[in-house]
Image 1: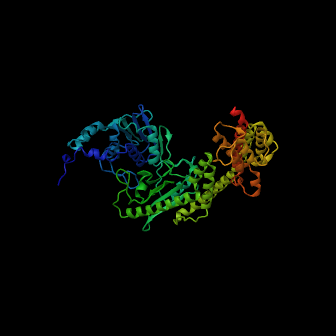
Image 2 (image 1 turned 90 degrees about the vertical axis):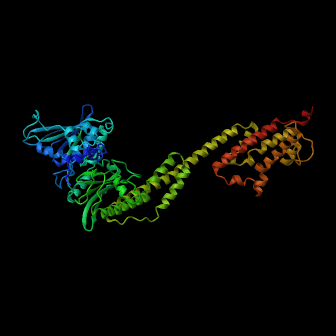
Image 3 (image 1 turned 180 degrees about the vertical axis):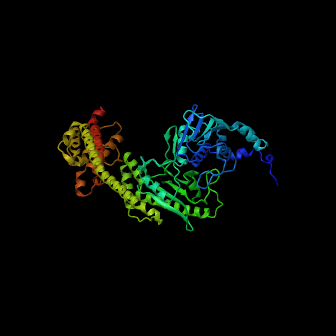
Length: 585
């Protein structure tokens, strides 16, 4: 069958532009790939016209009229295997992002040429059944020779791609910060060795592994772009290296940094990225989609594909599965990531930063008892044996993790020691405060009780048996004019109680006009004396104060204050009592 122009419709335009480059900013990657393939040493990306236009300018070989026509072909490429792009459609990638694409280019010792593509024509016609070649011809201008600029010479060579009038639906993505982060994540930018000198070791290792070094200077608005990582303090100082070998064939090489912190790392500090010829394939989530399990992102790393048989897909967000090596390669990736996850579990078990933060929080909130219990448990857990992954490439970092573990353990031990000291200090301060409150309580008692207690010093104040009875007994004897041998008899005489349920009995004093209540007060007075104050029972071993003797000094101070408060109340009630015969009158 012979194919004609009419067979291929305009709807294919959407498939090869917006369909492939739905990431919007991905068009920038395509133009930078073309710049690198053209041998560029410097690429400038910048905004103009109030950020409405985005320009990609390189110092690559440039294009003459024939080369420019070839670049505008669809699905056709003259690039070789050492270059990045190979599908022959990248120059059209900006169609979905802007209203017009303008290309100005010059090859050494050749004229300068200009061409522009009207994307609105393509978008308007891409759902029609009109032949695609007619649409492309109508949307694309003629190649026009332009005069040499004042800063250009016969030897000048460059290509400028200008994405004019970024679409309103896209301009929220085409910001300085978004483009900067995108470039840092995707393009083959160099490491910032001023911030992380240790990455010079990675560069040397990649060179030894014959990973193509395609790191031109890329600037965004005159600021140089570097690729992560940028924060040396987040990682152990040991770099993990690993070769991915299938059936004796080296398919990829990887390097990895492991965080010293607890918790998953976010980009630009975390993530494992696949790269081929310096360009990133997919993002940090691609490796998670390949792994049969949960991987905690505690690493930053790169896996560089060195095999020409492992191909990225057209959108460069994944891989083609049509190679015999790819499935075994995925199995090897799975195996390594499983070992990385086991390393992360080991680190979490022995370094225990999560527990450290939890205990620190409890201490800051004053939860001393909770923190002490947690510290006892965590220090005990250090005695438990833990397994480390057998993967050879991970052995070098074990020493760093174990050293970190000992450092955190010593901090736990220091915490526990501080808690012990702090607890003693807190208890001493609390006792001091309790003693002060006890002195204040005593100063509020009736004067005769205070006078009686002045005979008691030091810890004697904590023995109610000698703090109250004398003053109360003297008051009752004075008021009743009676002098019985026992305190119980004195209260019976005063308030007319014997058997609490007995019938009315003559009383000498009254604290309440209701005889029953008066009698109960007398019984309560004696009951309190008998329970708390009765020195005879206390000394004979019938210890009614046993519950108090077994408490801590802090608790005993609290109880003593409460006992003294009751003593003061009882004394005042006796003091307020009047002779019964006076009441009857």
